[in-house]
Length: 361
Length: 240
Image 1 (cartoon, rainbow over the protein chains, first blue to last red):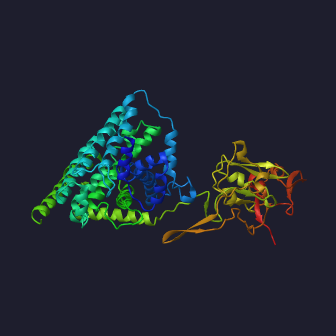
Image 2 (cartoon, each protein chain N blue to C red; image 1 turned 60 degrees about the vertical axis):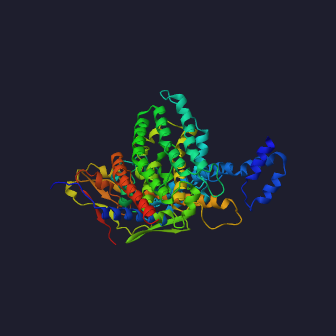
């Protein structure tokens, strides 16, 4: 039984010429070889290392630092600096994370205790499930013909958990934040789905492999309108600043997450970044040619994953700039934007896709 | 005039967005920030910066002008061999009227603006503590100079600026007190009582008290002029 599993792992391992000698040496040691085979087993690698959890960890540490530092630069401040001065405060997010770990978690009396404690952890399910379906070349957990549709459906689940968190908090700020989150959900979800639909129609398939193969010209050139809608929807969905309405630090103090402290706050705070990461991976696949890029012989199977990751991270770094440029929209303005302009241009992008597919082949 | 809702057309909206983004990107690449990392960098301050006040005893003529002019009533004169000022920094507002009013530049400005006191009692700095500058712990290695020629530019130099300013004593116009309006004199001898150098002596002449002023002893502090109730006395420029 164990041997059969081991053979299954060994038959589908990530081949990286750079570390292959080390892997070969480790595979000869009795128990370690099981662990190495598991880690390098492609489905596990996709979920746990790249583009999965390992990627999320890197993104979290990088994004929090980058966002604070970039915003500080634009606003003529310095930003985090004192933690590890020679690196200009580079390990500040790590220090914050450690602080969250050792801080007391306060569950206040009026909170719905079981849900209040459970939900931040349950929220990881819709956040991490899409990663199963995001392929990076050969490294993929679940290969599906309908991967894009499944990813979009799973992303749509995330606001529900946030609303549940706000309900369990039983706080008036959390309540306001929750209602705003629900409103925003209505504002972006339909244009977002239509934009993705336009792209799927254009490529003729929801299979990422087909989509990447068909992108001799990147999707952003083929249908820039759909990209615009997707981009704004990403900002709305992840509470980036022009649409930071549900969290709104200055007025409702982090909205649905107002009551959380300690590691639970650490988890819920990273939620938006994780969602951003997933949506950027999706954006890379749909609009920026996915994992295609020139081959790096030394990295072997890892090359596509690196390309996908690098492209997604570059998009995230650019999106971070929006925080320092725009003020926050009012809820009604954001709703109006979602239901008029965005819905309109998303339908227009769908029309472009239809025209391209049916009349131009 | 009626205030109307401002309407933007699509083109000006797009131009506005592009403007905002271009400004953001420009600042992200090369920010025009004007902050300094204070304990490690120090801004280069002008010589006449209103910082902590030091005192030079030899120059002081005990004229009390610093104590009289102080708007916050922070300066008290203390008696040593003569009256010398002490400053209560819990009251001081760093207006430096005292420094400006001092005729002999006995009070000196410095660029020290970061001093810590342990308690309120310690904030009353006595004369003997004002003579030597306080102990300084300097972390800064870089001096930042703000240069304005049309645009504000920060110039960073690897140098440590001296915070103690060399105050060159001004060439002072010498005064001595004299009876300008002798007909006003009541003979109450208040001037003789107040004089810190005992330059005024009381002499009885024809049944009247007359004040004799020894101009050699007089420092020109003007205390007697201030004290005289009938404006008999005045400061007169010293001859030669």
